[in-house]
Image (cartoon, rainbow over all chains, first blue to last red; front, side):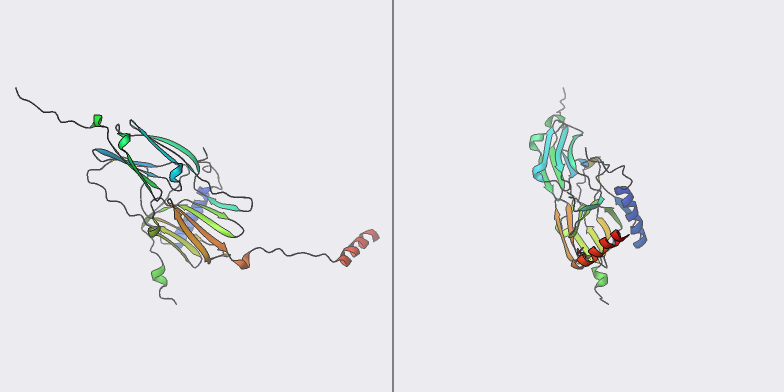
Length: 150
Length: 138
């Protein structure tokens, strides 16, 4: 897996980032919070999962991935995302100064808190963010039981 | 002094994420690629001022249903902001930015003046002959 390939390099993105951060703090008023956010050394893709009562909503950051190269599967309580992120190609006449973005294939399975009805899932991919809404499986939804008196 | 100077300068957000970038230099241009998922073209500002390139992507938090419970959170959303000092031989003249699938690509053309030129070195035949004579005479 090429993800994380540059993680250990002393001339890699972290050293570079450190230099830039220093520069940033030298030249600007220090912000309250500046967070470096990279794909390198991180689980890719990052996923947020929300419980909306009758349905689950999943958000997933997939910058630079073509819709055609993205596969989404839902079965039971598992959502699987497969795809490939293209590399910035650098030929012999070019030089790479900074490389912080990861690239390569990914295949991630996310376990959901409950079983879902994958057939009714809706997925939208906008500006590199995938949003999936999927209803919970009828089996896991609470059923009201009529209480009878004798 | 240009009075518009201050209004053109984008405000630095209080909290922001530094987007990861790739920077590649070719003979003709500098290509900067930045990951800014969630940013639409209308929310992206790319400015160059006094040799400093600024990327600012605004991400407004979506309103969440009150009944929503977070099960797992692996990323936060917010503005992206990052500045780069451009090398002297790249100017704001030939710059273009595009945004696709949350990835910003900025191409900055190299100034024509600073492109490497090959200067032909000629050895005059007479000079060459004299050198050979010097060697043989030793």
